[in-house]
Amino acid sequence: MSDEEHHFESKADAGASKTYPQQAGTIRKNGYIVIKNRPCKVVEVSTSKTGKHGHAKCHFVGIDIFNGKKLEDIVPSSHNCDVPHVNRTDYQLIDISEDGFVSLLTENGNTKDDLRLPTDDNLLSQIKDGFGEGKDLVVTVMSAMGEEQICALKDIAAATPKCLHVKIMVQQEVLYEEYDIRDSWLQKIERILMQVQARDKLNAQDGFAMWVGEFKDANFPFRPLDVIPLKM
Image (cartoon, rainbow, N blue to C red; front, side):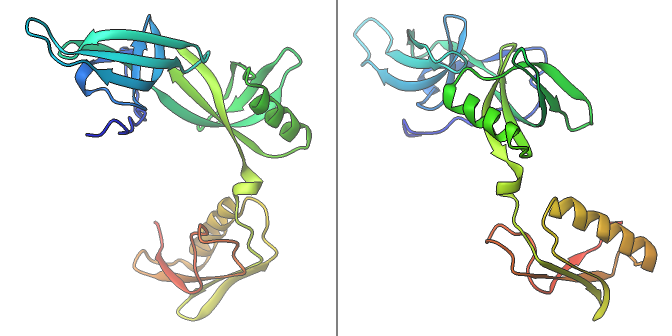
């Protein structure tokens, strides 16, 4: 493994444990490590040569993922280090209070109201400006070792391809057609498909052809006359 190998954040629930053990000699740059009881991203790592009577040692330079402070540690390469479980979760931003707390919408429809706005000036300005302009915003919350912080922002509208013409067909028969679909296109199309499926009593074996005109870019998931199995 190279020194540039990336460490991927855990997406699953790490359970009660905030960290897990990993041998020092296997921790690479861009991975994570706990230094002085703080979760850090490794920005530099070097290993000393083994002496006649000792172990090789790893010198880690890390940046605290929450406050940005630089921390260092030296650990024998054969010893275990604590590595934090780092998770990232997206939430829709629904409100900002006067005292700097945000209200976020979770996947199950509940609200999360225990986070403050980030301290990073650039990110803070983007969130405040976007919210003030009435944009639909999604924030990414990074969590590790019992701490959470907003670390990124997405503009739903800017990331959403715009389509001007949608046509749904089965066996060359047009079941639905609509022009000028611009907002929340994916959710709207999913609702349309459920309505068409219920109305026309389609079977799981049937396929439908969806024609989309003037899609924005290569990330748009449908193509003209794609045949997609119906989900029952």
